[in-house]
Image (cartoon, rainbow, N blue to C red):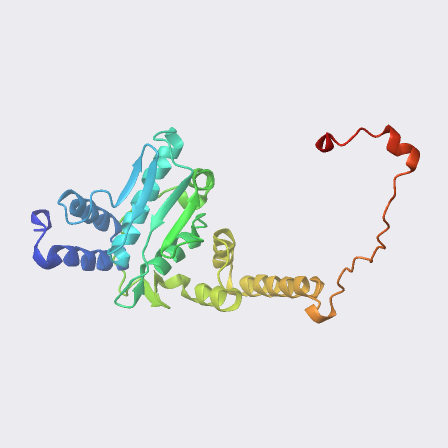
Amino acid sequence: LLEKLQPLQDNAAFNFVNALEDFLWAFELRATASWLFQLAVNRGIYQHDVFRVAEGDWGADFRKLSAGAALVGLTLWLDHMQDASLEGSPESPKSIVLITGTAEYNMVSLNSTLKAFLWEMGAPFLPCKTRTGILVAKAHSLKMWLKDSPFCFDLELKNAPSVPQLNSMQLVEGCFIRRGLVPAFKDIISRLGEVYPKKFAKLALLSDQMREKAIQIDMEGKKMKLKHLPRKVPQSQERRWQHPKRRFVRRTVPSHAKKILPENPGRR
């Protein structure tokens, strides 16, 4: 029946595929979710250029996709970029842009969801400094990560041997994230705020006890840095440089020098 999917009015097919992708991802039927995603692209339900790995154009735009559909698309995109990085073709741009948008659907923020997924893997995507809803990675850093990171050794989406009895995903602060990541995610974000992807990935992999020690050391280190920062002097107490007043002395030309000087050409 799914193979007969066609674009329908009022985005009915689009919304149906989005909901089904959420279900398949949550119950770890990832290979089926991948097949459905590519079917939706081929049938025109999803945009054909939802992600691209072409000459000088590596990019993705997952706006309007559900969280599950975006996670499937993101994994497929990473897999395609890994192949291109290993083969050396097609050539990438200097920066790789992932558009997530800023909207929330059913209390889920796509931007927060994809950021948490990428940062758990240590992927070098960072929020754009000038625009919200965009994640950017430097091409060199991303290629190195795709080649060397243990998280990228096998990006193929597979179905779990047995379907879990419970939903493997959980909604936390707008993030649709893996249930097992929730305690670490809450601990890191609440105490350290946003951290760099590599740091987040390292902390997330630690046991609760080791992560507690690492976070405590990090917080103490920040306190020490603040203590050693020079204090700002209030403006009223700042010493202002005053130029010493100089006495103006008019210089006179000796009479014998006047004879040597040429006549003023204007008086001729």
